[in-house]
Amino acid sequence: MLQTFCAWAKDTIAALPPEIHAQLTLGVTSPNPAAILDFDTPVALGRITCWDSGDYVAEILDQQSGRDLFDQKGACRSAEALTARLRPFLRKLGVLPHPG
Image (cartoon, rainbow, N blue to C red):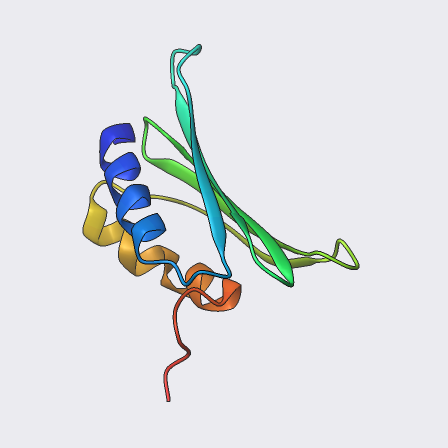
């Protein structure tokens, strides 16, 4: 699942608006390695950690207060599932427009 997440993350980074910065970091020193996608926006910091097992954690913090704005845990087995499950995270972070 790690390769699927990394491909999804690279596609997501490529589609970001210019005011949102993101960085993908790989960690491979455990039996269940993880990749971390960090987001830096004008008002919030976001992070998605995805393990090779398919488990993930998505978090958003307010930059000024440090308050949790979003916290989601789950598991995915495909890029389509990642996109569907992380859509609320991306909307809250301001990466995707809110539905009209």
